[in-house]
Length: 291
Image (cartoon, rainbow, N blue to C red):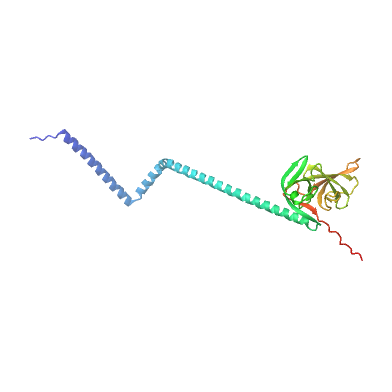
């Protein structure tokens, strides 16, 4: 009796045989590769060649992640730099403020030492005062000080700083006084050339760095660098206090007088401390007993 094979079983055995053949081929290929790896350096070479071939692909695949990491790192670095810059800027401001404060204290101490030095060897009493307000209008140079009638300040009293004559008291109130500076256009100060003793008048010009002596005889002995001091005439300023230094001498032909320009000795446009001069009262001579 003849045996017939159904179509379904034939397809099943055919597919199973194909899978078995492929499995045997893979096993044979693995055995060959293991043999080659034992006998030579073929597998590492093949792997190296494949890695070299696919390296650009790996780089391209890894680029988005690397770019994102670099962007995050750059952002963090920028934020850190901004924070560090702000911190250093604040420290710089604090250090600058401390240095400026210290410099101001040094300058104030120097001015106070100059004031103290200006009083040495003088037969006068001095009263310390501080400026409260400054008015340097071109037509009026005045300062306000924190001493007034309650502290025996009087009109006409001379005012100096540690370098020279500042001005004189013009108006006195109970707790403050107004001082007209020697640079005021309406101020006139009796002076003399310290080297020769020649007496004249120094006038303000509305500039804190400039005084003039317009009534010096044309042939008078006066030179640049000469020191000009108070003469003591006029009963306002005691004699011998520095007023300024000659900076220019103009002698014009046909004129009767030379125009002498001065640079004031006092710091008229800076500083805060001044001294008011108070002549010491003279004691009456002892009475002579009659025999």
